Every structure is written in C-alpha cells, then in structure tokens.
Amino acid sequence: METTRKHLVRLSLMALVAAGAGRASGADRTSLPHPIWPIPQEARYADDRLLLRDAVIVVPKGDPRAQYPGRLLAALVADQFGVALPVVDEAPAGSTPVVVGEASNPVLAAAVARIPGPAAATVPDPADGYLLHVGGSGAVVAGRDYRGALYGVSSFVQLVHRWGKQSVAVRQATVRDWPFLAVRWVHLYLPGRDQLAFAERYLRDFLLRYKFNGLVLELGGGMRLESHPEISVGWRRTVAEWYAHGETMDTIGEGIPLGTANRFAASLHVGVAGGAYVERTTCAGSRRSPSATAWRSSPRSSPSATPTTSPPRGGTWPRTRTWSGRTRTAPPTPSRTGSSST
Image 1 (cartoon, helix red, strand yellow):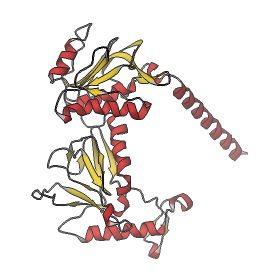
Image 2: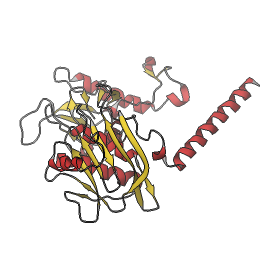
Image 3: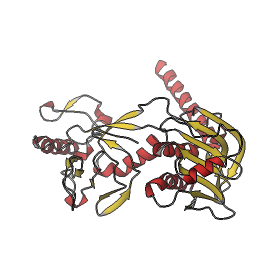
Image 4: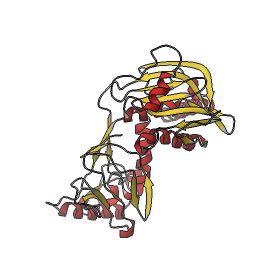
C-alpha cells in the first residue's frame, strides 16, 4: 500500500511539472517579471515590442573580433527561431537597426548617445558590464568591454520571441548590468573527440547565456606529459578496457566492483574523453608553443579523425578547430592553463 501511495505521489508530481512546462512553453516567456536570467542589476521593461521583421544587426567595420558579438546574435536568433537577421556595418534606409559591440567603438558610442530618455541610459563602468536598450525604432547592445558585449547579446536574445510564423519581436527594455560575483566558474571533464561540437554549443548556449566566466577542466589522465609519457599511454589503454567492458551503471548500479580482479566500478564512462588526451605540439610554420595542444585519437578511432586545436600562448582559443578534414567555428574565449573563460 505504501509503495502504491509513493508511486501515485511521484506520478502527480510529474504531471504538475509537465503542466508547468507546457504553460511556460506555450506562453510568451518574455512577459515574465524577470525575463532575463541572471536577473540584471538594473532593468526597466515595457509592455511594447520592437518588431524585427526589417531588422539588421549593425557591427563595427573591419575587425572580425569587434564584429563577433553581433554575428553571435545573428547565429542565436537563427538557431533558436529560424529567422535570419542580416549583419551589416551600415544600416540601410528604412531598416530597424540593432547596434552591437563594445562601447569604446565610435559606432556604439554614437548609438548610445542617440538613446532618448533619462541620462541613466549609460554603459556601466564595471568590467563585463553592458547597456541593453530596446526602443520603438531600434536597439543597442553596448558592452563596457568585449565580454560585456557578449553578455549583452545573451540578455538580448532572452527578450526575443516569435511574432507570427516567420518573424520575431523583442520586448522593449532598458537594462544596465554587471557581474555581482567576480568568479563564476563551472567544473567540467575533458570532452571526447566526438563530443567537441556539443562542448562548443554548451559553452555558447549555456555558459555564455547565463554569464559564467570560466571553467575548471578536469583532465584525469588525458594530458601527455613529456616527463611521464607512460601516463597517457596507460590512459588510452585503460579507457579502451572500460569501453570494451561496456556501460554498466544503468543495469548494475554505481560503485560495484567489476571485471578482472574487481578493477572497475560500474560506470557510464563519461568524462574520460574517449581515451583521447591533450598534448603539446608544434604548429606548422611556427616555433613550438608550450601552450599549443592537440587531441590525440583514442585506440578505437582512426588517426585521420584526430582533432587538433592550438590556442595561442596566454590568449584566446582559435576561432576555428579542425578535425576529420573539416573546420568548425568556435566562439573566441580567453583561456588559461587548466581553465578557459567563457
């Protein structure tokens, strides 16, 4: 009887969660009292909407890095709503401009100066801060710095919702925001070669969206050390044995000794990078960089499918990462040894 009662309670809770999710997805999420998460330091929301039917995203001329926040906004709107917003360096007549970039750029400074209303519509002084203004004739996303511009884009897209079947609108608002905490990191395992595309989307669609600013990357044995090459060799062999043994946690339970001499515990084999490891390497046509890295293939993969990435010393991850003869674009994120910032 007690088991039946617990089962009914569990089913009731699941029904309530499902009903709540249905209401949230069916309603206009941007109409919520706090449509942006994390909740900004200062925000004023209006009930009106700016239609983006004729919108263009205006970015500074020339510098690809300065243009990236605006191009990121275009990519996010296209991925989430299926609407393509052109990215231009000058708004055509009759268009609805959405100006995106760092406040220090003259294009952004002029756009901020044109914002009507109270003098409070200024870019916050703290690092990583941003001003987001959506009015009746256009919008401005001005970051105090580069990361602030990215955070402003992440907030802007949370105000966007569908308008009809082929267009989108954005809730009118004025938002001034800056970090409440200086350290906003997460702890991750080294992704496997087959998981790199997902890892890049996770950085963009989750960590950046919710304004995390760094991560601690746990490597396990996934790092080739010149002084101890046996570690990475043993890592590859051990992971190969795990995969050969198969996934066991779902059917047996966690922590139960398995295998020869009870060497293994039940596991889903997550966080082992598929047996790949990070290795210092030499870039073609350049001197050896201590911070250059490569993902070496696992024992169960072909050498031709080996992905590589070479972040510059003390700088940002490269805009492109190449593996299997293909090139993928990744958001530029500052990195440090043992961690990388979003």
